[in-house]
Image (tube, rainbow, N blue to C red; front, side, top):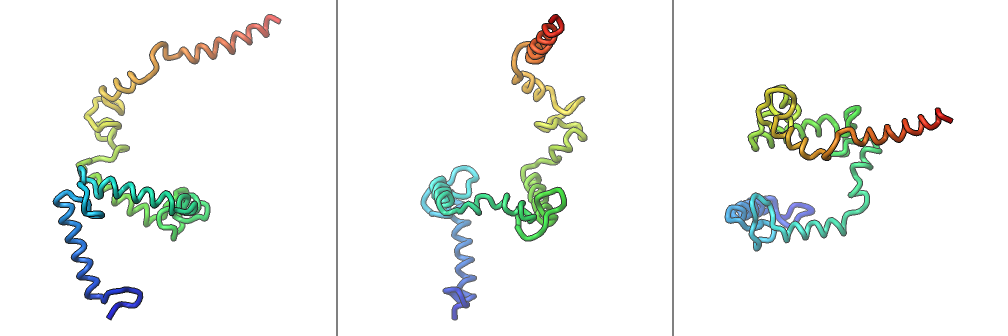
Length: 178
């Protein structure tokens, strides 16, 4: 007998769910998209590019303006932007429960990737704020410092200030003469 609002009984639904999980795992293990079952997966992708494109196109046409701006709507109504149920922590946009979940997810991600220290804590542990390499002084290593300096505009560092000051003080000098 089917569960009300469903097409299968509870026992058949559990069997179908287990079979679907096994099929997805098998397809992922052999490198085939578990969504469509026909295209190859690249790297650690969870679905093929064709399926991603279909989802993107569907969302682009079927999402309403309220779906697109739900963070803004929830924030304006004084609700957590993640769950939309609880009030956010004062001065923040998420409730305590959602913020804790996000911190836990981030910690698990760092553990999976082998990142031992949060970025903001790196200088306290003698590591570069940007790349995590060992440093002797300051907040960034020599390699990152050289990269940043090389990306700065060439020429005199103060040329912009000097030009502005020359214009300002030149006009002031002219006013005094008159």
